[in-house]
Length: 279
Image (tube, rainbow, N blue to C red; front, side, top):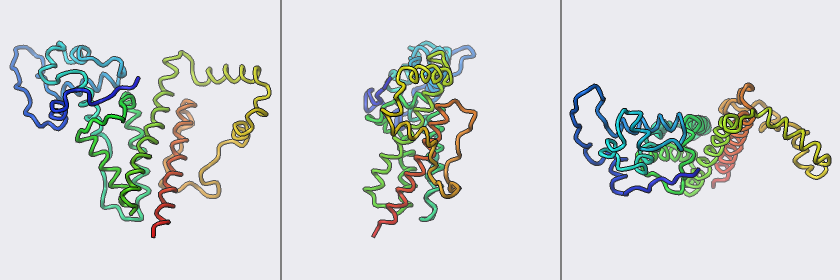
């Protein structure tokens, strides 16, 4: 399910995101119920989406978590569209901040750390991956995350136009890796079978039904026969490279994390090569 942000009233949505308007007056009511606020509503909505997924999100469900009716929430947040924008931007406050003091030759380790932090951010909040990048939220924390990556990339000394395209490469790369990890964690629950059970059943059937598989698909079979290829076969991985995945992870998640580790190393090698080609 893909969800598009930015569907509420532009002025009202951006006012809430940037807290440009004064908060609505707090109503003193008898009883032990805590007073509502935009932040409290957003926190409850994020907790709901983290626990039950985007499909469970509704004003009524958020109200239930707060012990209030959905109508009580509308005084603070106009509707679900605006709430989604606020949730998306709020969790982006967890992203790392830039360190512009990094030396020109010390760009690889900070970028590696950034990519790992962002991957884990998406894994903590998999519903964020359902929010399309076609319509940005334009909130302060989303911009801060973008500013961080640009700052880290500018340390490389590459031209602004190249940095712009690298931003458009790195964010989708990390999101794609995180999506596979999130799907891997959901697959067993959603389908009722583990990775091992699924592959065992399908592999046995494929071997029986397509006995000439290796002859028909020699490139695919060749990769399997040769085994995993390390990104640095003649030397130990550099110290700033992301650590290898835990062998105890489910198969698909382990593969996704290894793909992330190797792919990130190749991307950073490409940045190094681009730096070397500068006049």
